[in-house]
Amino acid sequence: MKKISPFLWFDNDAEEAINFYLSIFKNAKAINITRIPPDGPGPEGAFLVGSIEIEGQELVFMNGGPGHPQTDAFSLVINCESQKEVDYYWEKLLEGGGKETACGWLSDQFGVNWQVTPIVLLELLKDPDRAKAGRVMQAMMKMVKIDIAALESAADAR
Image 1 (cartoon, rainbow, N blue to C red):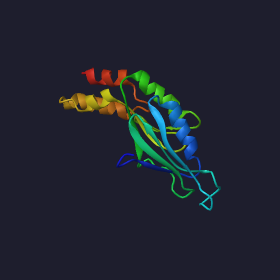
Image 2: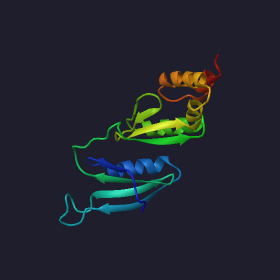
Image 3: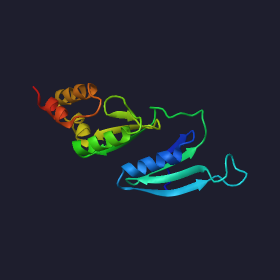
């Protein structure tokens, strides 16, 4: 158990979300599933809380009922090495009713917000040539899914 882990509240589909994420991420595993005991707050044996590890990060999921929807004030960032990796996560996380947002952000079918971010974007934005970094920022602001080739083209433009 990690000392600090993100905790995600779902109405009643946390276990479904866990299974969805475990199917997408190659380096992922279930850690713990706790089901409602007799005389608990819901049907005995139903999913209550569980944790998974994705790429070394533990996430905790709970079925807590309505009233606390996911919000874009919290998102999970996937740092991608290549366009192929960006495309893979983008497509997989949109399956089942996800929605594209902007600038590499999307909301999956459970309302969880993700940033599918190529590492090169962060490197280009930190470039000491501030005009170059500015061109990259302007290019990124026009994108929905991040396009690495377009970012690099903007960086090289004069």
